[in-house]
Length: 391
Image 1 (cartoon, one colour):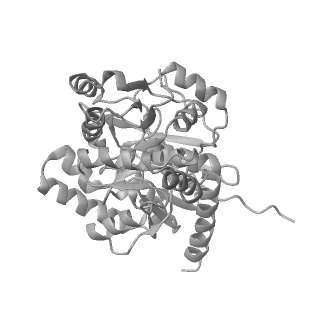
Image 2 (tube, helix red, strand yellow):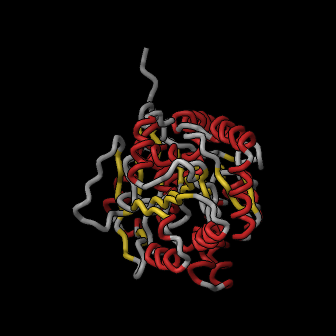
């Protein structure tokens, strides 16, 4: 009996390693897991660092790119790259999955049209907020959103990372309501008690201090100034705590200045980036509460990572990224006021019974591995390929 032909999947993204953001992590984990049962090709821009070499268990096809001045990002130019176009033409894809509506994503859509195969788009970002934050122009933002919607409307299906994001894109003007495919994590529960004690010693954490955590890019859009203001109010109440910031970014130096002015230096630890996944898991396990007042994120991976260690997250009400939680069931919500956020932290920590229940249920409800997520994705791919073949 002939062995069933392996599916060949094309994942298209306009930012990729060595640059790292949430979308890059999602695509990498999709590719790693799916490549165990399928042929996976990631189509992405070239790396700025010419010495950088790809080393993945899946194939990566790189496009020429142009640097965007004063940023870490580039614009891909796949339509002017003969090698990229030839590699794409010869890829023999069964399905296209785009993770960006820009040049490389558009190349994926065009390939799908030319070869009569299905194309899916995952909607990762709140583009309206993104464009307005960068341009401060409503006119430019509206033009950009119109173009993005036009691109996504060419796809057979759009997947949002949660229900709130699905509604946001419908409000943008998308023709059909996007379906939902939740994100996941590769972190496993961390069980090394001795390692946690060593971390406490390393960071000077006393037994009577609560530990709060943030993991991610140190960027103003993450509402980190709000976090500092909330921590300042905890200090004024003589609350005993240690706040750990894991990550790096453009706001780091300004953050440190604000922390110093607020008299918070002894309460704060900056670890820098932590790339080792086991070490990162240990930092989540160390924490009592994950502080994430971002209104920018759509569905951040860090809240799933925190849940993997039974650490609940405190969000702001109406934040898109809080859509996957139910208040006081598997997460916590606060009003968007630093004073009230600080008071909420104290209330959470004082209500031991509720805190323990929410911690366990965050793990139960939010923690999903990429293996489980991509099994769902693979089944959806099969269904779409079958449906497209009958048209």
